[in-house]
Length: 158
Image 1: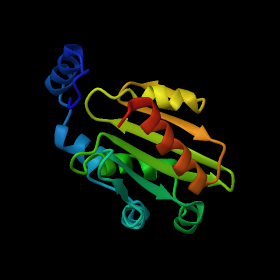
Image 2: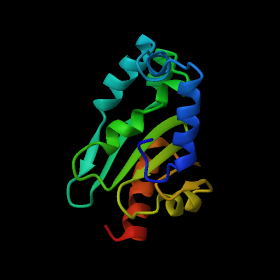
Image 3: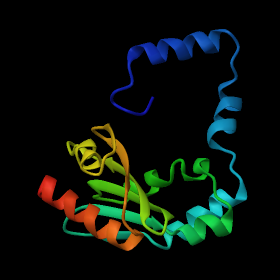
């Protein structure tokens, strides 16, 4: 319900669910208010790697494979992590870099305003939509960070 592309039909479906007895508090708690401890430790550790380019409005976070392995993180543990990055004041493009192998880095991109991050993801063989996209970059973490940020700047003249 929080995104501009949420259609009226979604609200009608929610109203129908409420009329049939769905407990919104229980649903919220299950989906958004309960997390395994490792997810919060991942958040803490990842936030230590938060970086920002003041002039460009690009903010990013890196998660090395060592951290994922040490915590036993699952793909679900990354849900919402990018939103912390995007919430940094004046961020135009938020990026989550997650190292999955010595020469492979998954990227998640989010934009604020009119920046089309799908365009960036497609450069790296990925996709998504205008405000949220992702890809797998065949580069080690440090080189992926450098290359992706370079592409964001080049494509959007930040």
